[in-house]
Amino acid sequence: MDFTSFLGPLHELADCAICPRNCHSDRFGGKLGYCKSDASFNISSICLHHGEEPVISGSGGICNVFFAHCNLQCIYCQNWQISDNRTDIRSFGMEIGDVISQITSILDTGINRVGFVSPSHFIPQMKIIINIIRSLGYNPVWVYNTNSYDKPGIIRSLEGMIDVYLPDFKYMDSHLSASYSDAPDYPDIAIAALKEIYRQKGSSLHLSSEGYAESGIIIRQLVLPGHAMNSIRVLECIAEELSPSIHISLMSQYYPTPAVSCHKFLKNPVTSYEYSKVIREMERLEMTNGWIQDLESSGNYRPDFNKYYPFE
Image (cartoon, rainbow, N blue to C red; front, side, top):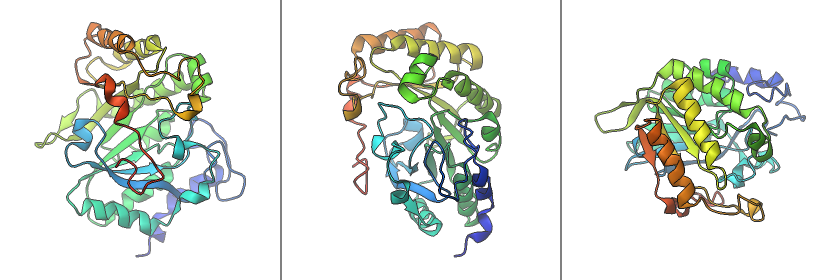
């Protein structure tokens, strides 16, 4: 099938400013921007994933589309095999026909949820995928799984297209965001993006009769070793600037990757004391909607993107 008529959104990449880096690079040419990504469909994996929140993946799983590279470069990234911008982006190139074929083959099994992971630097490609899938008669729940380093205007352009937002809120400490993710402006950028998401969806998470999320927001917060106070400040910001009723996924699943094996804090797992301290803050703020994890969960979320099925 010829999908040429759907490729219009790619024109934005000729002068790319779709994320807060504002590189204004021509991704059709040889000079790439911060994310070192071109105008192709640079996707590392399209697979059935069972490891998201229960209302997202449930027992059947979700079809996740993992984009390569990232507009943040977190030194502790759990998906480091695909997010490192130093890797050759051409090794992740896919033809749009293959992308659509892989997604629809999963949808044809009865799975009715598609998630885009790290899509902030691939918004035009994501929109194309959604429009093509819809044109073929499919109507899955679309999930936007983002680091929240997004422009509010770009998030606004997704209104009516994205059903469930699954954003991280990583930092309220600009020194941490600069040191760990090369983004000193992350706190301001993230809260602005989250306010736009909240404007669209409010604090309610709407579930299907089967218990799957159909519309709403789930904000993720990964507790980092040595930085429980950052997590507490993130929760306080959500409660004050958005709503304490928003569903929170408080994650203890951090594990040290080889890149941080010598780091003062990040070489360690999160301790029970640290995680419990953040949970107590959730309770104090009356943030009762969402999920917490077992402290041992760090052993359960270690993908290997060298495998065809990274999570098996």
